[in-house]
Image (cartoon, rainbow, N blue to C red; front, side):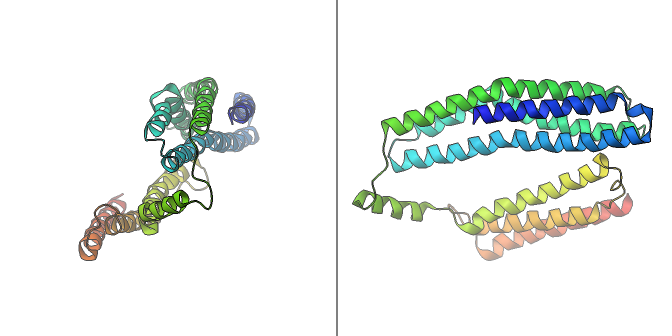
Length: 269
């Protein structure tokens, strides 16, 4: 995975080199500016996709380590050792690089309309490329350490074999400890709610043709999704589920207040 990630990072950096070259000639005419905006958008999307891969890798490997350690009765120390990558530079780099990249895309649109100084955009470009290089150096090392941890765990411990009483007991324990599906759905609903706000911010400040899009439908959808998530989360919490009236009453109250605030703010603006 580390080798694949390095190759993808270098590919994205090459794309960004081309984006920078189109930016240097963007002042020669509207066609050159339009082309720079288009390739800049493509470069931003590519970088966001590439930098999201390590998060998916570490999340998946964490679930594997946690599940393998639990099934083999290896203990919780392995999961804690896996989490150590979040205390290193790799996690910081992966968090900062997409933020700089989105700032570059938004600043490019704002510079083009004259709402911020021209120096801001190239400064953010330099910061974005530097953060990508930081990821290229630090993240693969964390991946290699993580792979070594997984190999060590597999060498020292074994899961129960099929057809044994140990495996049957393990299956029963897993079914009893599994999170309720609707509880998991609650997290997804709240995540989608926050993403609706981010989507509107991108359309409003990062695009040209969608700049005048109304915030109302996005914010209403966000309020509804967050309220749904809060209700499901409280009702199906595996440790202390709330009664239906309490769980949904609180969620509906939050939704009504949020919708009222959203409608009031958008009406004033």
